Length: 160
Image (cartoon, rainbow, N blue to C red):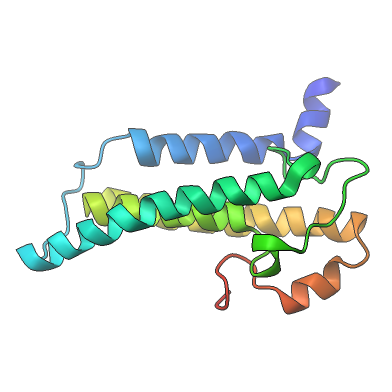
């Protein structure tokens, strides 16, 4: 009975996310080779990665802190929670996902590996799927969520 509840509240999404992030950051990068750039372009990408990685982590951490008691690893909202629309949540509905995407992008720019690029794309697609389910549940719990969706970007501030 308990395992059924875990699946109903989105625990499977958390498991898939952990696997994807583990493969991305801890798995091999050289299976399919690396993209070929000039030395100056490659070095520039590495410098961008050095800036983006901590920025992504910082965004994810700050967003988690801003959720306060609403923070949960599950995509289903906590009971008696509140809809946070301030701080980073005023700019993007899923700033933790955005921060993780930035960190994953930085990892790709650092490795410049084809496999890492594929994993980055898979992670973005996964966050799109997970956020749809999460937003369905948020809309069920918070009547004001529809308005929040209309005025706030989903995953990338000012873009999408």
